[in-house]
Length: 158
Image (cartoon, rainbow, N blue to C red; front, side, top):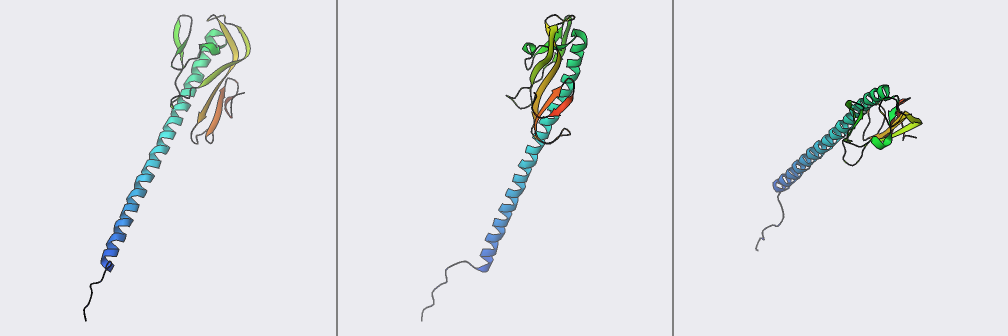
């Protein structure tokens, strides 16, 4: 009687394959969680930058208003540009949104009149629309509006 060799894997070989598979899965899980963590950090950094930009815009718009007797006309609003009043150059620097292609949108509102201090027309109020990608101290991710009379408000500008 002839004994044929057995085909298949031994228990040790199966254990080695299972251990290698578990190791590969754990490495993939660590890499994926690291990518998600970095993505959340980038979103938080962009939102932080937006809120800093809007705080600076608020100060600049109030300075312009104190010198011009109102807020600038929407036609002067260009991302990356500056709005000046008379001899004072660069009173208001208009930043870009940190996410390319999504500018802050400005609109002069209320009563329009001629500026006694800067020339041109000025408005009695303004609204700047922006959005956040994640939760901030303002609230959850979404659309927000910075207004001259109410500050930051949730939702799109009127």
